[in-house]
Image (cartoon, rainbow, N blue to C red; front, side, top):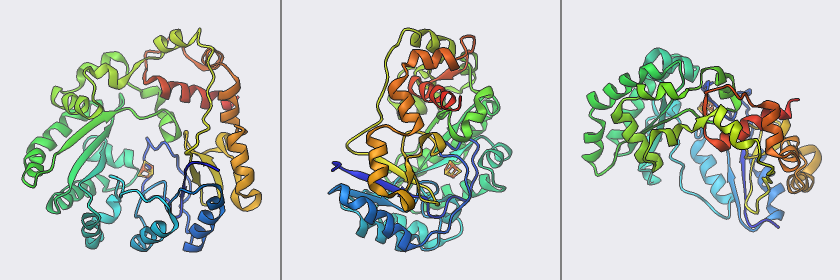
Length: 345
Ligand code: SF4
Protein backbone atom coordinates (compact mmCIF):
# COMPACT_ATOMS: atom_id res chain seq x y z
CA UNK A 1 0.00 0.00 0.00
CA UNK A 2 1.21 3.50 -0.78
CA UNK A 3 0.75 6.31 1.71
CA UNK A 4 -0.81 8.33 -1.07
CA UNK A 5 -1.19 8.11 -4.87
CA UNK A 6 -1.98 11.02 -7.19
CA UNK A 7 -3.03 10.08 -10.70
CA UNK A 8 -3.46 12.56 -13.56
CA UNK A 9 -5.19 11.50 -16.76
CA UNK A 10 -4.53 13.51 -19.94
CA UNK A 11 -8.18 13.47 -21.06
CA UNK A 12 -8.24 16.31 -23.56
CA UNK A 13 -4.70 17.68 -23.96
CA UNK A 14 -4.09 21.36 -24.51
CA UNK A 15 -4.94 24.11 -27.02
CA UNK A 16 -1.32 25.34 -26.98
CA UNK A 17 1.96 23.93 -28.23
CA UNK A 18 4.42 25.87 -26.07
CA UNK A 19 8.04 25.59 -27.06
CA UNK A 20 9.14 25.29 -23.44
CA UNK A 21 6.55 22.58 -22.62
CA UNK A 22 8.24 20.04 -20.34
CA UNK A 23 5.41 17.51 -20.65
CA UNK A 24 5.97 17.53 -24.40
CA UNK A 25 3.63 17.68 -27.36
CA UNK A 26 1.29 14.84 -28.13
CA UNK A 27 -2.10 14.66 -29.81
CA UNK A 28 -5.12 15.87 -27.85
CA UNK A 29 -7.34 13.07 -26.60
CA UNK A 30 -11.07 12.81 -26.18
CA UNK A 31 -11.56 10.51 -23.22
CA UNK A 32 -14.79 9.99 -21.31
CA UNK A 33 -15.88 10.23 -17.70
CA UNK A 34 -15.91 6.41 -17.63
CA UNK A 35 -12.21 6.44 -18.58
CA UNK A 36 -11.47 8.65 -15.57
CA UNK A 37 -13.55 6.40 -13.30
CA UNK A 38 -11.68 3.38 -14.72
CA UNK A 39 -8.27 4.90 -13.96
CA UNK A 40 -9.31 5.80 -10.40
CA UNK A 41 -10.69 2.29 -9.79
CA UNK A 42 -7.46 0.68 -10.97
CA UNK A 43 -5.28 2.63 -8.53
CA UNK A 44 -7.72 2.69 -5.62
CA UNK A 45 -6.80 -0.74 -4.14
CA UNK A 46 -3.20 0.41 -3.63
CA UNK A 47 -3.76 3.40 -1.32
CA UNK A 48 -6.20 4.84 1.17
CA UNK A 49 -5.43 8.34 -0.04
CA UNK A 50 -6.08 8.66 -3.76
CA UNK A 51 -6.18 11.99 -5.59
CA UNK A 52 -7.49 12.08 -9.15
CA UNK A 53 -7.00 14.78 -11.81
CA UNK A 54 -8.58 14.89 -15.26
CA UNK A 55 -5.56 16.70 -16.74
CA UNK A 56 -1.84 17.11 -16.72
CA UNK A 57 -1.69 19.57 -19.60
CA UNK A 58 -4.15 22.53 -19.76
CA UNK A 59 -6.62 22.39 -16.84
CA UNK A 60 -10.32 23.09 -17.52
CA UNK A 61 -9.84 22.98 -21.28
CA UNK A 62 -13.07 21.14 -22.01
CA UNK A 63 -16.65 22.51 -21.73
CA UNK A 64 -17.54 19.99 -19.02
CA UNK A 65 -14.79 21.26 -16.69
CA UNK A 66 -17.18 21.77 -13.78
CA UNK A 67 -18.59 18.28 -14.09
CA UNK A 68 -15.05 16.86 -14.26
CA UNK A 69 -14.03 18.87 -11.19
CA UNK A 70 -16.97 17.38 -9.26
CA UNK A 71 -16.17 13.91 -10.54
CA UNK A 72 -12.51 14.22 -9.50
CA UNK A 73 -13.70 15.32 -6.05
CA UNK A 74 -15.91 12.25 -5.77
CA UNK A 75 -13.13 9.92 -6.94
CA UNK A 76 -10.53 11.41 -4.60
CA UNK A 77 -9.97 10.72 -0.92
CA UNK A 78 -7.75 13.81 -0.72
CA UNK A 79 -8.92 16.81 -2.72
CA UNK A 80 -6.57 19.74 -3.31
CA UNK A 81 -7.64 23.33 -3.93
CA UNK A 82 -7.72 24.43 -7.57
CA UNK A 83 -4.16 24.92 -8.83
CA UNK A 84 -3.04 28.47 -9.52
CA UNK A 85 -3.00 27.33 -13.15
CA UNK A 86 -5.96 28.16 -15.34
CA UNK A 87 -7.06 27.82 -18.93
CA UNK A 88 -6.33 31.10 -20.72
CA UNK A 89 -8.07 29.62 -23.75
CA UNK A 90 -11.27 29.21 -21.73
CA UNK A 91 -11.22 32.37 -19.65
CA UNK A 92 -11.53 34.59 -22.74
CA UNK A 93 -14.28 32.44 -24.27
CA UNK A 94 -16.42 31.44 -21.31
CA UNK A 95 -17.58 34.20 -18.96
CA UNK A 96 -18.80 31.68 -16.40
CA UNK A 97 -15.33 30.24 -15.97
CA UNK A 98 -13.80 33.10 -13.98
CA UNK A 99 -16.87 33.23 -11.73
CA UNK A 100 -16.42 29.53 -11.07
CA UNK A 101 -12.72 29.99 -10.27
CA UNK A 102 -13.63 32.83 -7.95
CA UNK A 103 -16.31 30.76 -6.22
CA UNK A 104 -13.68 28.05 -5.62
CA UNK A 105 -11.66 30.67 -3.75
CA UNK A 106 -8.84 31.14 -6.28
CA UNK A 107 -6.84 34.22 -5.30
CA UNK A 108 -3.95 34.03 -7.80
CA UNK A 109 -3.60 32.70 -11.32
CA UNK A 110 -0.46 32.14 -13.36
CA UNK A 111 -0.08 33.25 -16.96
CA UNK A 112 2.95 32.76 -19.20
CA UNK A 113 4.47 35.40 -21.46
CA UNK A 114 7.56 35.15 -23.64
CA UNK A 115 7.93 38.84 -24.45
CA UNK A 116 5.79 40.90 -26.81
CA UNK A 117 3.10 39.70 -29.17
CA UNK A 118 5.29 38.07 -31.81
CA UNK A 119 7.47 36.11 -29.37
CA UNK A 120 4.56 35.10 -27.15
CA UNK A 121 2.46 33.85 -30.08
CA UNK A 122 5.48 31.99 -31.45
CA UNK A 123 6.49 30.38 -28.16
CA UNK A 124 2.91 29.55 -27.14
CA UNK A 125 2.40 27.98 -30.55
CA UNK A 126 -0.91 29.74 -31.09
CA UNK A 127 -1.84 32.91 -32.97
CA UNK A 128 -3.34 35.64 -30.80
CA UNK A 129 -2.12 33.99 -27.60
CA UNK A 130 -0.55 37.27 -26.43
CA UNK A 131 -3.75 39.27 -26.84
CA UNK A 132 -5.71 36.56 -25.06
CA UNK A 133 -3.25 36.59 -22.14
CA UNK A 134 -3.65 40.37 -21.81
CA UNK A 135 -7.42 39.99 -21.91
CA UNK A 136 -7.18 37.19 -19.32
CA UNK A 137 -5.24 39.54 -16.99
CA UNK A 138 -8.05 42.11 -17.17
CA UNK A 139 -10.71 39.47 -16.56
CA UNK A 140 -8.84 38.11 -13.54
CA UNK A 141 -8.38 41.58 -12.05
CA UNK A 142 -12.05 42.44 -12.57
CA UNK A 143 -12.84 39.35 -10.51
CA UNK A 144 -10.30 40.10 -7.78
CA UNK A 145 -7.87 37.36 -8.74
CA UNK A 146 -4.22 38.49 -8.83
CA UNK A 147 -2.29 37.59 -11.98
CA UNK A 148 1.14 36.04 -11.55
CA UNK A 149 3.15 36.42 -14.74
CA UNK A 150 5.74 33.80 -15.54
CA UNK A 151 8.29 34.37 -18.26
CA UNK A 152 10.54 31.74 -19.80
CA UNK A 153 13.76 33.38 -21.00
CA UNK A 154 16.48 32.27 -23.34
CA UNK A 155 18.93 34.06 -25.64
CA UNK A 156 16.23 34.47 -28.26
CA UNK A 157 13.80 36.47 -26.08
CA UNK A 158 15.82 38.02 -23.24
CA UNK A 159 15.81 41.28 -25.20
CA UNK A 160 12.02 41.45 -24.71
CA UNK A 161 12.19 41.78 -20.91
CA UNK A 162 11.85 45.60 -21.07
CA UNK A 163 8.51 45.08 -22.87
CA UNK A 164 7.30 43.06 -19.89
CA UNK A 165 8.49 45.72 -17.48
CA UNK A 166 6.58 48.34 -19.47
CA UNK A 167 3.47 46.17 -19.54
CA UNK A 168 3.53 45.75 -15.75
CA UNK A 169 4.03 49.48 -15.18
CA UNK A 170 1.62 50.82 -17.83
CA UNK A 171 -1.13 48.41 -16.87
CA UNK A 172 -0.64 49.36 -13.19
CA UNK A 173 -0.77 45.71 -12.22
CA UNK A 174 0.60 46.27 -8.71
CA UNK A 175 -1.88 49.06 -7.96
CA UNK A 176 -4.84 47.19 -9.40
CA UNK A 177 -4.06 44.08 -7.31
CA UNK A 178 -3.60 46.18 -4.19
CA UNK A 179 -7.03 47.77 -4.72
CA UNK A 180 -8.69 44.51 -3.68
CA UNK A 181 -6.04 43.37 -1.20
CA UNK A 182 -4.25 41.16 -3.73
CA UNK A 183 -0.61 41.10 -4.73
CA UNK A 184 0.83 41.15 -8.22
CA UNK A 185 3.80 38.85 -8.82
CA UNK A 186 6.20 38.05 -11.63
CA UNK A 187 9.04 35.61 -12.07
CA UNK A 188 11.32 34.47 -14.84
CA UNK A 189 13.37 31.35 -15.31
CA UNK A 190 14.66 29.13 -18.11
CA UNK A 191 12.59 26.06 -17.30
CA UNK A 192 13.90 22.54 -17.14
CA UNK A 193 15.71 21.26 -20.24
CA UNK A 194 13.33 18.43 -21.07
CA UNK A 195 10.32 17.88 -23.28
CA UNK A 196 10.02 20.58 -25.91
CA UNK A 197 12.39 22.86 -24.00
CA UNK A 198 15.24 20.42 -24.62
CA UNK A 199 15.14 21.66 -28.23
CA UNK A 200 16.09 25.13 -26.89
CA UNK A 201 19.35 23.86 -25.40
CA UNK A 202 21.35 25.86 -27.96
CA UNK A 203 19.77 29.14 -26.83
CA UNK A 204 19.95 28.63 -23.07
CA UNK A 205 21.29 31.66 -21.26
CA UNK A 206 24.96 32.01 -20.37
CA UNK A 207 26.35 34.08 -17.51
CA UNK A 208 27.06 37.07 -19.74
CA UNK A 209 23.32 37.42 -20.48
CA UNK A 210 22.26 38.08 -16.90
CA UNK A 211 23.17 41.78 -16.97
CA UNK A 212 20.42 42.25 -19.58
CA UNK A 213 17.74 41.58 -16.96
CA UNK A 214 16.01 44.79 -15.80
CA UNK A 215 16.46 45.29 -12.03
CA UNK A 216 12.73 45.53 -11.30
CA UNK A 217 12.10 42.13 -12.95
CA UNK A 218 15.10 40.63 -11.15
CA UNK A 219 13.66 41.90 -7.84
CA UNK A 220 10.24 40.34 -8.49
CA UNK A 221 11.96 37.06 -9.42
CA UNK A 222 14.18 36.99 -6.33
CA UNK A 223 11.15 37.60 -4.16
CA UNK A 224 9.25 34.77 -5.85
CA UNK A 225 12.04 32.22 -5.42
CA UNK A 226 13.16 33.53 -2.00
CA UNK A 227 16.68 34.08 -3.32
CA UNK A 228 19.11 36.96 -2.93
CA UNK A 229 21.15 36.67 -6.15
CA UNK A 230 19.84 36.26 -9.69
CA UNK A 231 22.71 33.79 -10.34
CA UNK A 232 21.03 31.47 -7.85
CA UNK A 233 17.86 31.47 -9.96
CA UNK A 234 19.59 30.64 -13.24
CA UNK A 235 22.15 28.22 -11.80
CA UNK A 236 25.70 27.41 -12.79
CA UNK A 237 27.41 26.92 -16.12
CA UNK A 238 27.43 23.46 -17.64
CA UNK A 239 31.23 23.56 -17.41
CA UNK A 240 31.10 24.18 -13.64
CA UNK A 241 28.45 21.49 -13.14
CA UNK A 242 30.51 18.95 -15.11
CA UNK A 243 33.45 19.74 -12.86
CA UNK A 244 31.25 19.28 -9.74
CA UNK A 245 29.80 16.01 -11.00
CA UNK A 246 33.01 14.44 -12.20
CA UNK A 247 33.74 12.83 -8.82
CA UNK A 248 30.12 12.30 -7.80
CA UNK A 249 29.45 8.57 -7.58
CA UNK A 250 25.90 8.94 -6.34
CA UNK A 251 22.85 7.29 -7.86
CA UNK A 252 19.21 8.11 -7.12
CA UNK A 253 15.89 6.42 -6.68
CA UNK A 254 12.68 8.12 -7.78
CA UNK A 255 10.50 5.76 -5.79
CA UNK A 256 8.29 7.48 -3.25
CA UNK A 257 5.55 6.50 -0.82
CA UNK A 258 3.46 9.34 -2.32
CA UNK A 259 3.96 8.99 -6.07
CA UNK A 260 2.31 11.07 -8.78
CA UNK A 261 1.53 9.23 -12.02
CA UNK A 262 0.75 10.64 -15.43
CA UNK A 263 -1.58 8.54 -17.59
CA UNK A 264 -1.61 9.53 -21.25
CA UNK A 265 -4.64 9.30 -23.53
CA UNK A 266 -3.62 5.78 -24.58
CA UNK A 267 -3.35 4.72 -20.91
CA UNK A 268 0.43 4.47 -20.78
CA UNK A 269 1.62 5.40 -17.28
CA UNK A 270 4.70 7.43 -16.28
CA UNK A 271 6.11 8.63 -12.96
CA UNK A 272 6.07 12.41 -12.56
CA UNK A 273 9.83 12.86 -12.93
CA UNK A 274 10.30 14.41 -16.35
CA UNK A 275 8.57 14.35 -19.74
CA UNK A 276 6.20 11.42 -19.98
CA UNK A 277 8.04 9.57 -22.76
CA UNK A 278 9.21 6.07 -23.71
CA UNK A 279 12.25 6.07 -21.38
CA UNK A 280 10.04 6.55 -18.34
CA UNK A 281 7.06 4.41 -19.32
CA UNK A 282 5.89 1.97 -16.63
CA UNK A 283 3.46 0.08 -18.84
CA UNK A 284 -0.07 0.28 -20.11
CA UNK A 285 -2.89 0.36 -17.59
CA UNK A 286 -5.34 -1.41 -19.91
CA UNK A 287 -3.10 -4.24 -21.03
CA UNK A 288 -0.80 -4.71 -18.03
CA UNK A 289 -2.88 -3.53 -15.09
CA UNK A 290 -2.05 -1.33 -12.10
CA UNK A 291 -0.29 -4.04 -10.10
CA UNK A 292 2.39 -4.59 -12.77
CA UNK A 293 2.77 -0.84 -13.29
CA UNK A 294 3.26 -0.21 -9.58
CA UNK A 295 5.72 -3.09 -9.39
CA UNK A 296 7.66 -1.62 -12.32
CA UNK A 297 7.66 1.69 -10.47
CA UNK A 298 8.82 0.36 -7.09
CA UNK A 299 11.47 -1.81 -8.75
CA UNK A 300 12.66 1.12 -10.90
CA UNK A 301 12.12 -0.83 -14.08
CA UNK A 302 11.50 2.08 -16.46
CA UNK A 303 14.66 2.76 -18.47
CA UNK A 304 15.12 6.20 -16.89
CA UNK A 305 14.61 5.03 -13.31
CA UNK A 306 16.91 2.04 -13.85
CA UNK A 307 19.71 4.17 -15.27
CA UNK A 308 19.49 6.74 -12.50
CA UNK A 309 19.49 3.97 -9.87
CA UNK A 310 22.41 2.00 -11.29
CA UNK A 311 24.69 4.40 -13.18
CA UNK A 312 26.72 6.85 -11.07
CA UNK A 313 25.98 10.43 -12.05
CA UNK A 314 29.69 11.03 -12.81
CA UNK A 315 29.44 8.41 -15.56
CA UNK A 316 26.30 10.01 -17.01
CA UNK A 317 27.97 13.43 -16.93
CA UNK A 318 31.21 12.14 -18.48
CA UNK A 319 29.20 10.54 -21.26
CA UNK A 320 26.77 13.40 -22.02
CA UNK A 321 28.09 16.65 -20.52
CA UNK A 322 29.79 19.40 -22.51
CA UNK A 323 32.73 20.57 -20.41
CA UNK A 324 33.19 23.68 -22.53
CA UNK A 325 29.58 24.90 -22.37
CA UNK A 326 28.70 28.10 -20.48
CA UNK A 327 24.95 27.42 -20.64
CA UNK A 328 23.28 27.86 -17.26
CA UNK A 329 21.41 25.12 -15.45
CA UNK A 330 19.98 24.49 -12.03
CA UNK A 331 21.82 21.33 -10.87
CA UNK A 332 18.86 18.92 -10.63
CA UNK A 333 17.57 20.08 -14.02
CA UNK A 334 21.01 19.48 -15.49
CA UNK A 335 21.19 15.93 -14.12
CA UNK A 336 17.73 15.31 -15.52
CA UNK A 337 18.78 16.65 -18.92
CA UNK A 338 21.89 14.43 -18.93
CA UNK A 339 19.89 11.39 -17.82
CA UNK A 340 17.37 11.87 -20.64
CA UNK A 341 20.24 12.07 -23.13
CA UNK A 342 21.86 8.97 -21.63
CA UNK A 343 18.57 7.05 -21.87
CA UNK A 344 18.60 7.49 -25.63
CA UNK A 345 22.04 5.97 -26.16
S1 SF4 B 1 3.30 24.26 -21.29
FE1 SF4 B 1 1.22 23.93 -20.57
S2 SF4 B 1 -0.05 25.29 -21.83
FE2 SF4 B 1 1.93 25.03 -22.88
S3 SF4 B 1 1.66 23.31 -24.33
FE3 SF4 B 1 2.50 22.47 -22.39
S4 SF4 B 1 0.69 21.84 -21.23
FE4 SF4 B 1 -0.02 23.25 -22.83
